[in-house]
Length: 366
Length: 176
Image (cartoon, rainbow over all chains, first blue to last red; front, side):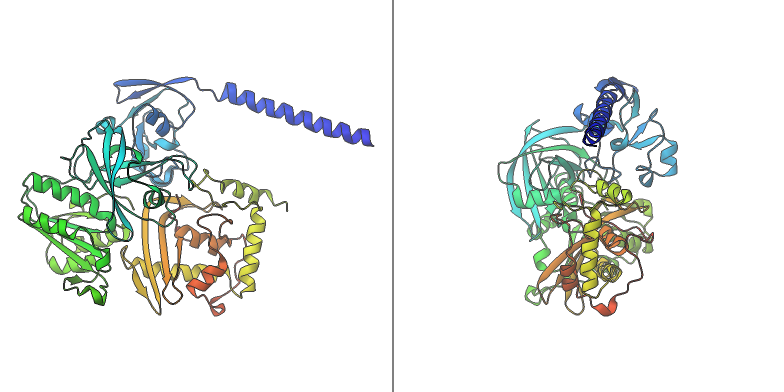
């Protein structure tokens, strides 16, 4: 009886060992895709080790694809054309429209590099670089929005357009055991090439925002990559309606500073929503910009000012306030930044005032 | 306690780095079935149901959306802010659809307590009775949820069996 039991244990152990060995061998010989060639836009060719996802593989080669979730397939930003990549996975389908599937668009984070791939990327993505920076300034703008200034170290300068964003690399720390990336708009003007400014609002339990608000210190090294995005001022003479709230201030501040420096004198009305006076920030900077840009008017709106605020400005939801100012928006164009709910409400209001949907611009962070 | 293979597979999907960076289980070493059973017992002991809690959470979420990212007052003594970040999350219990990363922060001005939850958590509580594992930064203790949101037994019902969730409209989480 005892011998039979020991024999049984021995057989099971031996079988487990054989199965484990088979798995190791399969991993070694079957999952080894060897070197693969990635052809970028039919021109540049790079040789990479196969086996990893396309987003990470390209990043290691200095080719940065926009991504707000760091490659988990939960943001839908890292769309690339993979001419010979096969059909999209089920995890990609919620993010892809039928015409995008027909055009062989895939999420780079979901494509595993198993063979040579032919890729089409927007040319500007090939200009995206990684930058080593150090924190040169930290300032609380409100109780939950922090201004972060990063001095560029290597390379020492960045070229970007007002309104674009970068990806902020968060190193492993107590809330996360791996590097993560999050997207933040640049608040400084493109003329300030050796230092960028970000405005980061705390998100409860957010990995990056907790790191920035609770752990980031003056002088800390920070790696970023960018610039990304097309939330930039369109040329023309149309009146500009800007609507924002919270950290949505950042790209609009960059655009306004750029307009001031370039002496662009278009009429622009900027509606900024907050609850009470303590949630407003950069008021002095906006006043200064009103003096520098002839057609600029900053209109803050408080949805519920405290009695002690002694507020005599506009009150109500920012979209309601903007609606009161805009009997007809059919000839203007709009730039929106803030909560996805704010953007949805602003689009509804602006289109009801006659503004064509295609003249409403925003970064779809929602 | 040994648990059915389907729960074991779901528990595996809840580990860090699978569906989300930090996972859903925190440092909780218990099998998923035990986690669900203990929270279910707690909610029942308090005379409530998971659906009642989820309904209350959805109520505040709905009220908060009107603020367009800015806090709003909700009578009699709540302050609610609803906002979102880019992205969507799948339900680890394999419901179809993706839940946008929207979070709802409810401050009870009477008790001065604040609680934050996502659309995905509203779904996971209502459909699965899942409040996340102990040690998860996102765990919602049922007692805390009931106290802060002031959910009363009168709002409760016990219509949906545990682990047999309806499809439900996709909602979500700010989880990273």
